[in-house]
Amino acid sequence: MAEILQGTLDLMVLKTLNVMGPMHGYGIARRIEQVTGDALLVNQGTIYLCLMRLIQKRWITAEWGVSDNNRKAKFYSISKEGRKQLAIETANWERIADAMGKLLRMG
Image 1 (cartoon, rainbow, N blue to C red):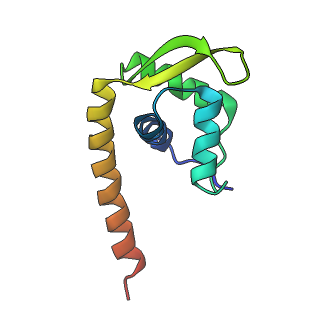
Image 2: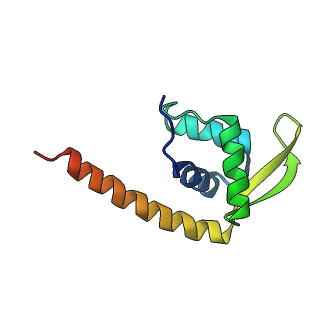
Image 3: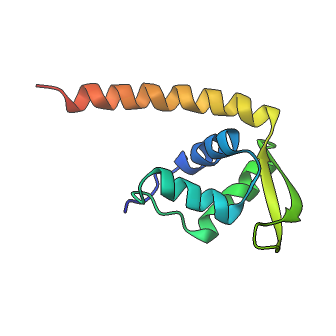
């Protein structure tokens, strides 16, 4: 299990919501863990701070609904602005990953 790098959780949440559609915070955290094979563990406090930050930036929206286990839960969705930011952040991370790959393959 690894700690999540600063700034990457926003990207992971935006990508998860873009692919999966509206989800509650616990579901988002579990999905990130599932997709990464539990290599990344998402703390509940951390995910909710991230969600509040993304709402303030208007990259996601929130509305109340009912979860699978019939409980009231806040569901988060990516906004139009969030989709634009997702494209920007994805391009940035692809450049960084490519650069790191080159550096690590250095002979």
